[in-house]
Image (tube, rainbow, N blue to C red; front, side):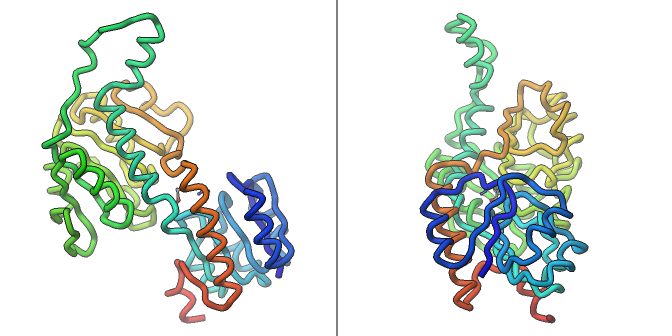
Length: 314
Ligand code: DAR
């Protein structure tokens, strides 16, 4: 069994290397390859562990030896999962490792925006004290917290919001009830929430989910928190609405335009670089979940396969 970690592990503890070593020959690459290099690296691999590298149809078709792709994370937008399915390659993800960490980060962003923490910190360091004017926040107890997406992370965020004394409303695709969350359509969630928090996967059907129309329907005092991919939001519309204070603020863990983004000029926006998941606990759970996926695949009982539908016809 040849197992290849394709691209620059964020975290690779010795214990993980030892365990994988027991399953086969383990090769780790510490940079992020282009597609051609990726194909070469995986040419005789049985299992590919992938963290950063997009693998599209053309590359997947050429990976004739590959038996499984194990993604390190929850999102699977890096891989053309349908093409992987047609090539007979199951793709697994790690769906649960960062649920609580991401949900907690929602509130880190929310509080930072609501209380102007970033600006306040800078002012104190410049020798200021007891300046109240620009820092008028809103008490959160009694506010309405709206989740778009009621999967694991949405529900974990809902539980924390309850602890703040907020009313929780939410939208999901099925319209199915969720305990502790009043389910309604997405339009109403956007209109009625004081804080909107997004919890849906990035894929072709969720691209631009938050249209300019939906964003414009938010209350002017509302905050938008996004710990998912930036592709869910019409970023230009968001920028205009935030600049004109037609939305009070936003906390974003991802942006579509990394360089020179106009959002960087706004002080009602708090940004983090994709770190919502990144805690000690999540990092360890990530390794446990990934190792479990690899183990079970080798044992012939694959789990967390995200392209089962496409494989069925193979
Ligand atoms: N987008 C998040 C975070 C990826 C983090 N990278 C890891 N776990 N190596 C996800 O889980 O999809």
